[in-house]
Image 1 (cartoon, rainbow, N blue to C red):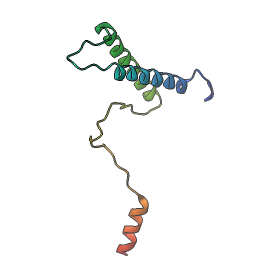
Image 2: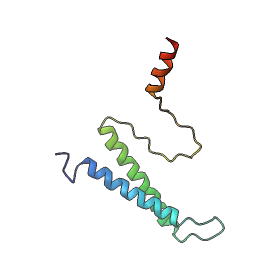
Image 3: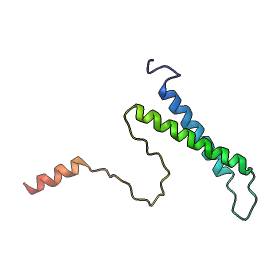
Image 4: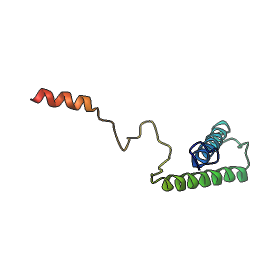
Amino acid sequence: MSDTDNNGPDREEEVLQIIKDTLTAIAKDTYTPPELTHPLSSDTINQIRHCFGIITQRQQELARARGEEFNDRPRYIDEPKDSFVVSLDDFRESTKKED
């Protein structure tokens, strides 16, 4: 398969992400406070959860096939990141000042 093939892994990942984004938008748009009746049935909500699980599982399989890790999970804005960016230019400047 060539990289331009519309049925390849890249296309599959794109389709999975679009479906996941759409399901997320549906969940956000239908959010209902606990004291109100949800517009979606509990069966539909469970089906959406099941879809999220299947999508994530397939995304993990595709990432493993590429030799990559897949750790796609929601993050809170104030949650510390596991990594941070270090500017090599700043590092070079700081070592020049010591010389």
